[in-house]
Length: 117
Image (cartoon, rainbow, N blue to C red; front, side):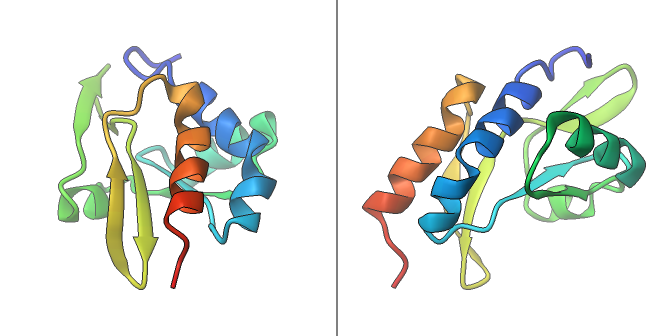
């Protein structure tokens, strides 16, 4: 229940619910947040996420890619953003992500319209 992060759970759950379809479309799904690994492990178990959550607790990745952030309760958090990465480069960015529960379906539609070479 982090102020300003209310959409993270609906977004994560949508990726959970569409995971098989995303995999069939060639995607490997990962979540990224600034919470520590223990927090992420608990969240992944509680939400039954079939994909790995990656910790960017030091914001190394987020800063390198200049991902959008916000601050709540003294924590710097990543805004909802989805990156399509192919061949080691960012091919497409979904930002802003709204509504968050529709993002996985939007990503799936994009992947189907832009199949990998």
